[in-house]
Image (cartoon, rainbow, N blue to C red; front, side, top):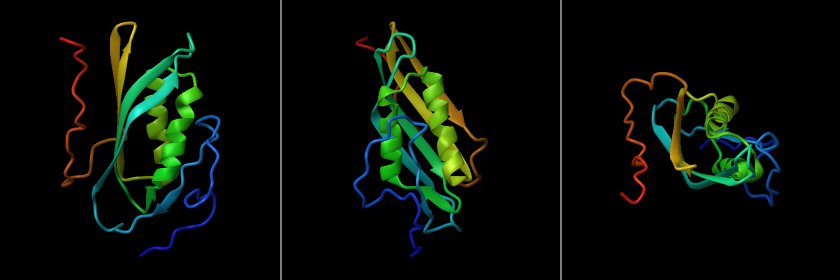
Length: 153
């Protein structure tokens, strides 16, 4: 088993919540199977941020799929990073794409996609999708499993 690298690793430590996504640290940890292509999925069904215009809360179901290279993103650091958006004002598109780009910057995966399934604002649900390119050939890539918003209809 690969050793966990030291540095800013937050795992196993009392860690204060970051005040903003920019201050949050995403910790890379060694991939135990760097010679194997496989998909890792993180789901955050209760993601929150703030509308940058009104300051009102926005809610989303975020799904992150990636194919790791040398590193994985450590889940506690990801949880703290996603939680840092709670008091952060940004449009849905900004939050969704920023999440994907920060993970790519931290771990340099073979491939990543993020789906932001936002609950209605002003009666209009907004879904935002971003990926780094074509998924590697031969991986099993399931549907993200979030149905389109249907309201009560």
